[in-house]
Amino acid sequence: MAAALPDPKLDRRGLFRAAGGAAALGGMVWAGKWLSPEAADGAGLPPDLFLGGTDGWIALPSTPAIPPYHPDVLAPAPFTTYIFGFRNVTGMTDTQRLNQKNKAQHSAPLFWVDQYDPNNPRDFQVQLTNLGLALRPDLFDAHTVHWHGFRNVIPFFDGEPSGSVSVPAGRTFTYVYRPRDPGTYMYHCHVEDVEHVQMGMTGLVFVRPLQDGQNLAGHTQFLYNDGDGSTGYHREFAMFLSEVWAEAHWADAHIQLPEWSDYRADFSLLNGRVYPDTLAPNGSVDPFHPVHDADGDLIAPAGHPELKYQPHSSLVPCNQGEQVALRFANLGFREQAMTLSGLRMRVHGRDATPMRGRDGTDTSYETDTLNIGPGESYDVIFEAPTFSGGSGSSGAGYDTYLLYNRNYQGSNNLAPGGFGGQATEVRVYPPGSVAPQQYPNDWGV
Ligand SMILES: [Cu+2]
Image 1 (cartoon, rainbow, N blue to C red):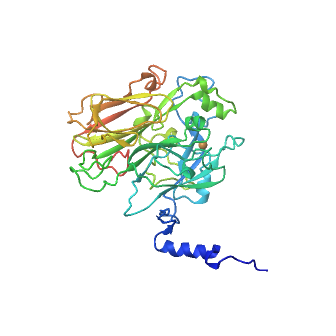
Image 2: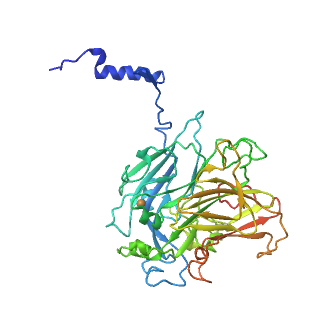
Image 3: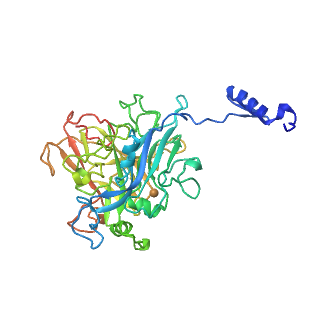
C-alpha cells in the first residue's frame, strides 16, 4: 500500500531534485541566504600520501649502556631500541604494505604540501593504515594523524581521538586537508599521545606558499607569501627534534608500564638520529618518490645498515653565498636551544606564522640560537659565508659550522664524551660545488 504523500512539491524526492538542480547552478537559496558550500575538491582521486602505523626497531649508540633498558636485549641486531612509528607506503601493493608491519621508522616520514590554491583547487589527502603491532599484539592500539597547529581543521580529520575518529588495527582512513597557512608544522599520532609520540609516531610537515614559482629577488622558492622575495632560499633542510627515554621504550617491548613522571630523555634526536649519525646519508626521504626493495622494506643508507629505519640525514651541504632555509620543529618533551655556531640565522616565521606585524612591519630578527619549546616551530634562513679554503675541522674542501643543542644534556645525551645528540654540521663549499636539491634535505650530490 502506497503511503499518502503530502504536497508532491515538498516530498523528499522532490526536495532532492530541487537541491540537485540548484547544485548544478553552484548553490541554492535557503531562507533568503545564498548557500555555496565548498565541495571536497579532489574527492574521488587517490590519496597523495599513504602512511602505515606500526612498531619496529631503531639503532641508538649502545655504549655507555643503561642497564637493563638500553640496549634492549630483545632488539634484533644491529638495532637497540623498540619504537612505534609511521612508514611511507605510497605506491605499494597491498602485500608490500602489509609487509611493513614491525618496520616503522623514526622520525616519521617528512612531507610537504602546497598551499591551497582557489584557482586550482585541490585538497591534500593522507591515507593512514594501521598495520598493527608485531611485538605487542595484546596492545590493540588505534593510531591517528594529528597535524599539529593546522588552523581550522575539520574535527573529523583532526586525529584527536576523543573528538574524532581513530584507525584501529587492520583498518584504513583518509585524512583531507586544505592548507591555507604556509610554514612549518609537525604531525603525530594522537592516540595515548604521550606514549605514541615518545615511541616515535611523530615527524615534520610543512606548507609551501602560493608565491612559489614566481621570480622575486632572484628566488623561486620561499618560506612565506612575503611579496618581496625576502624569504627566498636556494636550499631547504628540515630539522626535527625528538627524544627517546630508553626505559619507556624498553617497557613497551617488555610488557611493562613506565612511570611518566620519572621522564628523562636519554637520547635527544635530530631527524631521528644522534650525532654523528646525523651526518650519515639519507635513505629514501622523498615522500612522493619513495624507494624500497621488492618487499616494500626500506633500503639502508649507504654504509649504515643500523640506520635502515632512521632514513633522515641532518647534514647541510651548501655553496658559499647561498640562502639556506632551516625548518625546525620540536616534539620532544623538553625545550631545546639550537645554536648555529659562527653564523647568524634570520627568523622569518614561528609556528607557521610569518614575522610580520598587523600593518606589515617586518618583525624578522637575527640570532644564533633558537629556544624551541615542545610543539613549536621556527623557519630561519642563513647566508652561507665565503668559503675560506677548507679550514676548521675538515681541511677537506669545505668549511664546517656546527649546528648543535646549546642545552648540553641534549647534545651529549647525559653521557659526557659519550653519545652525541642533537648536533650536525653545515658544510660550506666553493661556488658551484653542490648541485641543486631534488627534495628537502637532499645533499645535492
Ligand atoms: Cu599511535
